[in-house]
Amino acid sequence: MPSYQGLQKNIRKLKTPKIEVWRNQYTDKDYVVILENPEFTCVCPKTGLPDFANITIKYNPNKWCVELKSFKLYLIFYRNIGIFHEHAINRILDDFVNACKPGWACINGEFNVRGGIKTTVSAEYKRS
Image (tube, rainbow, N blue to C red; front, side, top):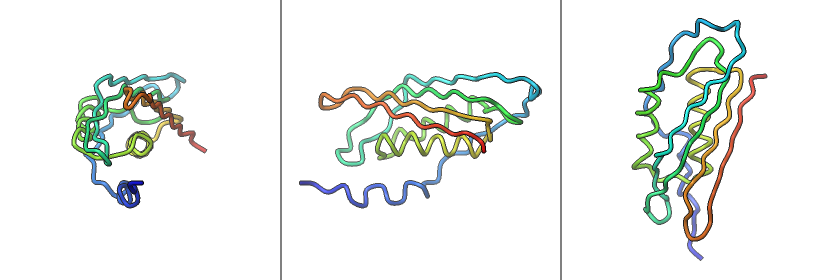
């Protein structure tokens, strides 16, 4: 049985591009922003083959909103990164939350079928 041990041990230390933000002028409103990227690509850390996914983020802006071009460049960064689906979604959520500090955020990654198995990973953040 091949080992996956050690393939992702430094994933939390991975240096990613900065996600830029801009000041929200409607902090008095409770609203939701939905960002969708149907062309997300990363690499399987075990096989080196590409993985494709539809990434959807829903968030409730607080003081900051995410600047879309920088977020697009952030997502493109993963194109050459070997990362498990579960780690990709959780890492994107962590970086997203650190950048804009939303009231709440939910990310869903719907990965294309590979070896007859479709993977969907969801992660959520709620400010305490």
